[in-house]
Amino acid sequence: MERVKVQKFLAGMTEFYRRTPAAAVPARSPLVRSITSELTGTEVTVEEDQVPMAYEDDLQLKRVSPPARALVELALVLFNLNEFVYVY
Image 1 (cartoon, one colour):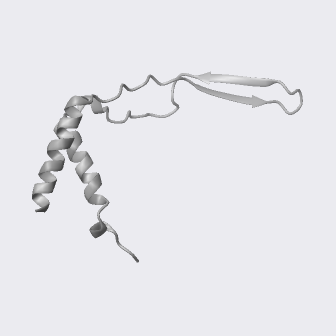
Image 2 (image 1 turned 90 degrees about the vertical axis):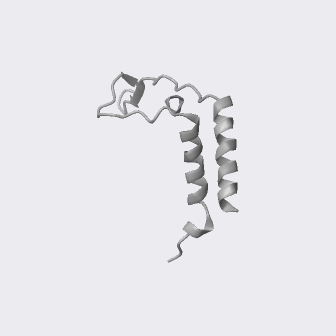
Image 3 (image 1 turned 135 degrees about the vertical axis):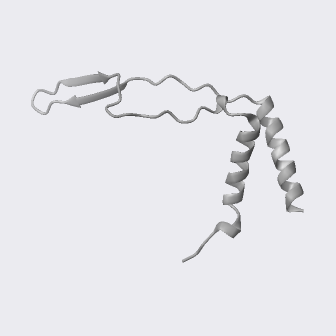
């Protein structure tokens, strides 16, 4: 019974992701920092292009196949089941 429900869910989500492409990842905008001087009241802004540390982009979903995206959804569903809730 549960296996049939999981198979239907995977088939439905795979078909959904085949019809619905992943949203485009927007380009990163530069980081703008500003500070106001306590003595003069003037505002100074600095625009930074680079991130000060190494940064790895999130996985872009447009490169992931629809069946793999459906498996991700299934994993989220399974982790939200009551069987995974543990009360101390």
